[in-house]
Length: 155
Image (tube, rainbow, N blue to C red; front, side, top):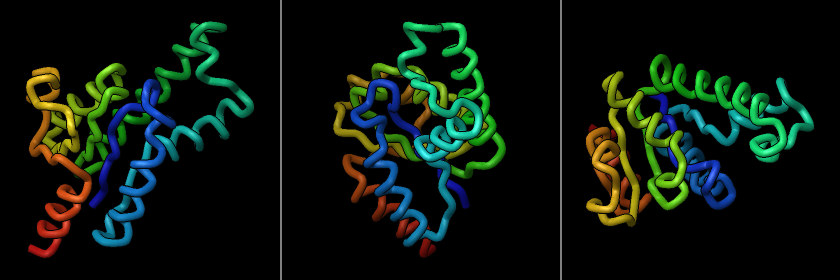
């Protein structure tokens, strides 16, 4: 099994590194599943294809190159969800709400029939209806999600 870790990056605190790192470690240790962590994969992509590039500054300094890079990242993420991931874990916070990538990832997962497990403290009535239409189950915390995944694993 393979999990995709979806959530804000562009507008998220620390690009969402901390929650993804913790969740990846837990999934690998307790479920023995592999994980697609967009933070890790983005770092690999930049080291290989655009070393020493200040990606975020390109949005104002060279929007054409920025778009080219984002197109590549979108392609990587969409292929991962469509072809390799079995389920998606999404952390919905202000960073995810402000950006667009998370919404696109959830749409891809829904279209390809992948379960989407949403962790959020945001009241559901404040989450866009489109997002609600893409999710399989909502959890108020990562601890609750972990209990669910562990119980599902043991069945």
